[in-house]
Image 1 (cartoon, each protein chain N blue to C red):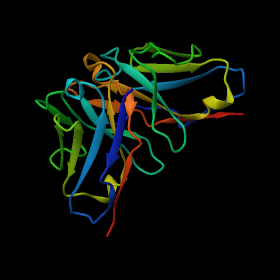
Image 2 (image 1 turned 60 degrees about the vertical axis):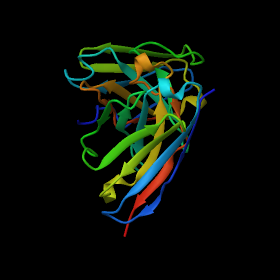
Image 3 (image 1 turned 135 degrees about the horizontal axis):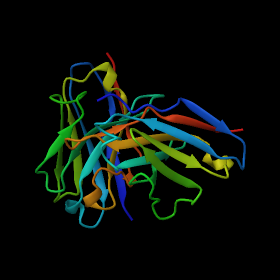
Image 4 (image 1 turned 180 degrees about the vertical axis):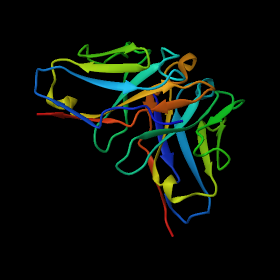
Length: 110
Length: 121
């Protein structure tokens, strides 16, 4: 059960788009379209932003989108805004009724 | 609206035990799976355990298997985590979390505010 691999940090300027990758294996990301993404601001609980690879829960901005290719999932944030600055975690079903998170990515809005 | 409130955290010595609780304000609490997720200071999220809506099935991360036990009391709308033989690496904020739809039990739509467990002598 090794954590999914995410870049430690990404950055972008307001209005730009950024993409955060999440690499797993054929036992988790590659086998199931059950990838989710969470946003966490300092001192707060995480918030679900994407589920089922690319679906947005009610209330989440259209600027957030998800995709997957093989063993790698991606989160794209378009039209970056200051309030997007946060930590982002991917998560995947990993079989045998277990779940695995990525190591997290710190997004800085320049 | 779903509210989750964790309690029971604190300082515990290595090798000792601690029990965390999560009180849920949710209609039909007994219809939804519940999870524990933890976050070590300055680190990422780690899934710990899940319990089915009726308590019939329980699954754990390898890092806690055999030491931690998840349970629930649906009559009290409460989730528990019994932590035995704790180690320094169990130091973390522990969150309870639950899905919006139990068919998608592997998503975490609702989270508590977390309770801090510090393992130290």
